[in-house]
Image 1 (cartoon, rainbow, N blue to C red):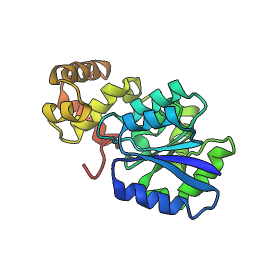
Image 2: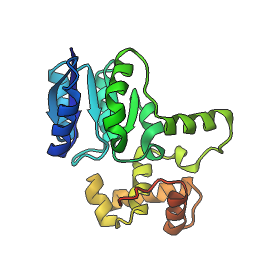
Image 3: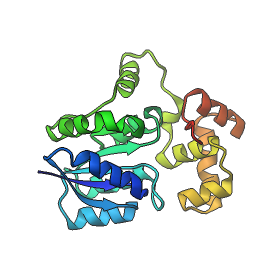
Image 4: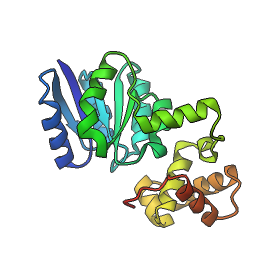
Length: 213
């Protein structure tokens, strides 16, 4: 039996995932968490073979939760299941220790197979993400500027480019506006942009902005 923890702040999504997964008799959703803090605590207290982790959580960014889970439980398998496209967080998630990255839109068709694959000791990489990784490997794409950013700087870029104000970004990231301003300044400096408009243009051109935002 494969014991799974589902981490998502939407109850309906958790319910849908549980129904989908438990159609397979080898899968059991042993726990559900709606925040990153709750997920970390549950992993400390119980054994899970796999964590399905959303990126957008109300208290912590999913990438921070992923890093904390891997720090405390290096052997735990984590698949990031997110509405964000692979171009945004796929490579970052894999580098941070995830064994797979799945866009929620493709989850019904690919999730069961992905879990079976990672439980067998392999990683799950979608066709879109595989193409991105291959292009980087063989040098067909230049080193992208945003790959030099820290997770916080990258999150600031994405949120800013999605039309959020400084105040809104600080609320989403649960940081002070002053701290967010520091991340924004570092992001602009690393990417050699003169202003926010150049950063937004870059983000749109490289598909770092969700269509829904």
